[in-house]
Image 1: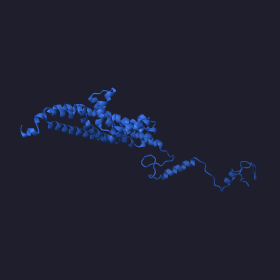
Image 2 (image 1 turned 45 degrees about the horizontal axis):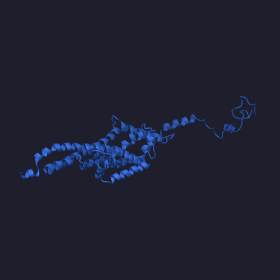
Image 3 (image 1 turned 90 degrees about the vertical axis):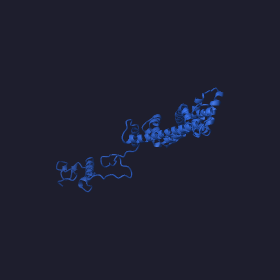
Image 4 (image 1 turned 30 degrees about the vertical axis):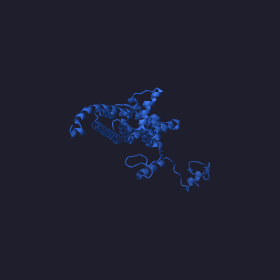
Length: 333
């Protein structure tokens, strides 16, 4: 055996690549199954913690306990301890449950941070629109909380993918366990372990690229939906509903000023508006004039007559007749 073959054997490398590829499928399955369950269960944990009460306290205690203990101990507990109480699971299932619960607790904190970042006014606007709690959470709050936490969830996905070698402790034939078996058969660990590291690097970079694409997709999709109007229109309808709710809650003045250029929205505080035109002022004066009776001059004789009762007789012509004017002072006297 020459020196080059002693350092790296290409024939042996080509021989172990198909075996490691099959083991990589097991690793990818364990990763995505665990993360799918962790994402769903983590959201439930976040909602229970935000609900408060006894259930919220118990959920918080469970989350802190799982986060504060090693993942390997949890895997051993599920696989070796639970069978003593009548719960027997195979190695792959036990590993999936352990990874799911462990990362569900981390996902719950990420979800809770995203949900608490949504302004309280969103809930109040939905209450003004008479939306129930489920529709408010599903259509208004959750779509606004998910995009900011996508990078954090992506980091958890990559971390979970790199923690799958811990399943080799309970004899799951994933990448690391398969490489160890291949190396023990020929006493050559360089090629299998190097290939395992390259496979983990490639899959991690692909996962990171997918997370970045999803983040850009969610961000750009929300902006395009508001500006250009996409086919689904979910974000646009949500913003319109919130705008209407905000307008319904705002008190509307009776004589509110108008904006210039055909925009008849109310003018807020600190905003300038065009002064009314002189013709508009004249029209308003005429309307007010027609709607009320003109008051007489207080110094005239007619006003004095209105202030006292009109007598039934006249000093100059006796009983009131057509010779008398409309005032109490006779025109013939």
